[in-house]
Length: 113
Image (cartoon, rainbow, N blue to C red):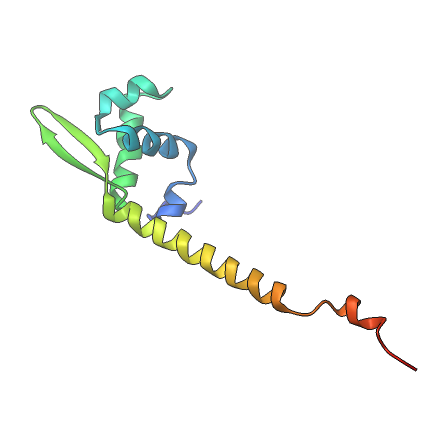
């Protein structure tokens, strides 16, 4: 089995627990304990998922007394958004190109003998 290596944000977000963590952090910054209270996993498991998200650049953390508070990293989320915009623009261009082509079936019956 291959060891896990941080790829892009999409690979990291393939895990449903990490997507749930990102959804929670999109509402507001939270500590590990707060996240664990909302998810059906332990605090150590939440910490492991947060490490993966942090390594991928999707979350940041800061010390707040004896705990660490996590929040979404705007730069990491913006990079994903930019990729989605690129995919969407390519799909729209492809659709426009197809829509602009004449329909071969509509001109086939117009031949005169």
